[in-house]
Every structure is written in structure tokens, then in C-alpha cells.
Length: 129
Image (cartoon, rainbow, N blue to C red; front, side, top):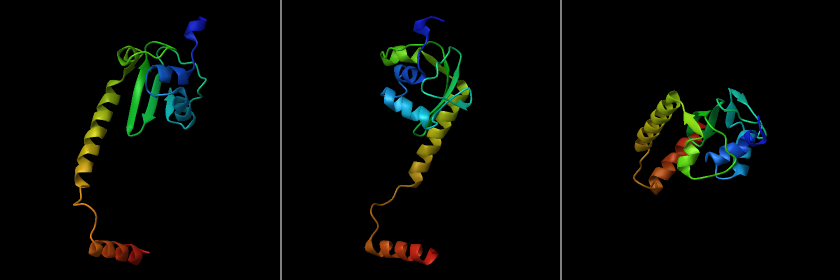
């Protein structure tokens, strides 16, 4: 393994454009949002080709396999060539997106509650305690 193949995980995540900065990548790794081979890892871990990463970011949860290593952040098309998302991960993300969209439609309201509705809400809240 040459020096060029040695790269930190936080730097690879930044180069692959999962996070905008290395600091955000490091924070996510330390916060348990990134798992390598099913285990929590450290930002200084050296990823290898073929490693499977589970990356949680917001509502999304991706499972990717590392195809290539890079320490340089390039454009999105080149960054997408560094990894391959598993088919199962794509299906789960699409399903989760559809459920979020369907759920969001049920939360539509007519706007702010009226004074009468606010009183009813407070009464309901106070009565439940």
C-alpha cells in the first residue's frame, strides 16, 4: 500500500461529497452517523476499497461500497465514481421518501389556529396532565 492509498475516512467522505466540509464529516463520524462494516469508527480510520459504509444524513440512510479512494474533492460526477450505492439502499431511500411525502400531505392545515381553537388546545393539553 503506497502513501497515496492512505487516506482518512473523514477526508474520503468529504471528497465523495457526502459532507460539505471535513469538520462536518468528522462530527458525523464521532456522532455515530457513519458505520464501517456495521461498526462505529473513528475519523482517522483508513478506508479500503470494498469497505461498506452506512451513512446517515438527515432523513437519508445510505449504504455504499467504496470503489476508489481520493483525497481531492472534485465535481459531483467524479465524486460519484468513488462509491456505489447498494440496490437495497436505493429501494429503502425511495420508500422512505414516498412515506415522508405521503405523511406530509396529511399534516396540511388551514393556517394558524383561531383563538377558539387555541383555547381548546390549551384546555385539552391542561386536562391531559
